[in-house]
Length: 66
Image (cartoon, rainbow, N blue to C red; front, top):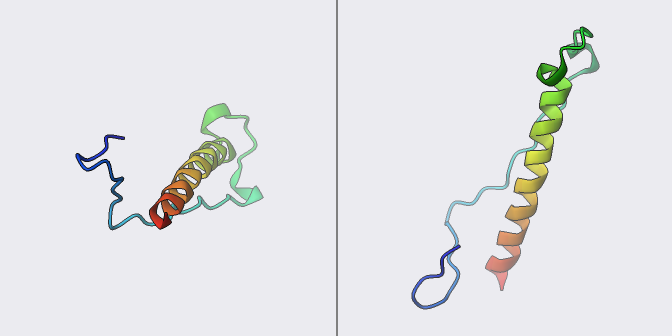
């Protein structure tokens, strides 16, 4: 992140909390062993990204309060 000339961190005014993906129902899986395109595999990838985004958002919120 580049600092402005006055060395103060700036934050966007609109920084909404990330939204967690919805876990699929067990019945959503077709059971064919489709690998990376399984609804659960896709969910786990989206969940991992959400957790990373949420941690970054929390850090921005904490820094904003300082």
